[in-house]
Length: 498
Image (cartoon, rainbow, N blue to C red; front, side):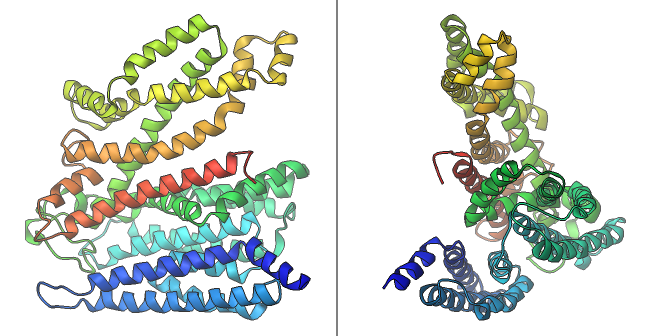
């Protein structure tokens, strides 16, 4: 009886079992979406490629369901997942051929029984690189590509091979709190590969340097605990994967995509249906929608990050001053910000753009101004709480200046809620950017931005719906990814949660 209870306890505590359930359910849902889009009810035609994707995803979901049942049985009977079950992960890796990142990420986690944060980073570093190569490789079917395409693809493939080697070495050599000192050189090379925008490589390289060079076990354990909380959350990990994938492809696209295909009119290829040459079709000017969405990711990310960082810095500074000093200073700052807060953010943005013109810089300023009061309020509340802690009173007693206390003691200990809020509100900034561009008040109309692309596609919903579906999906996925990552960061940085 006691053994049975212990095995059920193992099932509850297993980190892999919830991920297995999530994987097969989401894969099944995607397969049904492919099935629904493989048949045209108007014409009665069937898209064989989409139907083949339905078959592949359905097979992956059935295999994942079988693995999930095997895992549950192993945990109930033995308390651990058996090696025979883990070997099924090698079969599940075939899902990479269909771009199924859900099943592939789970397969890597299933194969390796000892999963350190570095192993998870290495897995997502490789998956990000692989997807960047796959997206860039679609340009081979176009009539012409940029001159730097061959060299860039060779470099990307070389980095992918290096990432595989790193993944194998990390799986075998890196422990919970230590790594061989010889890995410091490899960590530096990994950090250099992060120049492509793959932030997973940045975190992986820094983590390997920390474990190979530092003897501070408590610091390493805190690092491990924080990232384990994030990676344990499947939606947060996948959200981070999509954000970093968009960031990487927006940087790499400068060398693998031809910008002229996204902005120059091609009247010989107007309103082409999706094909290998034009995966997302072409718009009413013959521009490649696939290239426009790729280049549009750069605009959305730049505006989203900039319009979040600027109000976070300004609002954080004002909120920190208001929360630390006397009620007179607090009232002066907060009442002025209350006036600004009383104006709806979207109306304020429209007014600023209408007054100064529609361009990227004005769009960032317009979105930033309206967000300052919310960040100031968040920081003020945190500073009011932290200012009453004993270490702040000790700093005052030692004669430390107020500014030093604010920026060295109070603000650093108030940053966790600000980081979470920033991550959650970037999604809102992306939506606001697309909304204003859709209304013609965002970036210039000819620039490939997701709102601009959606505005053009909305006029062809009945005849060429894909022109609106693809940019709409891109906006939805990016916003959801930021929201999922924000939820994961909130759980990881909240000391009240285990």
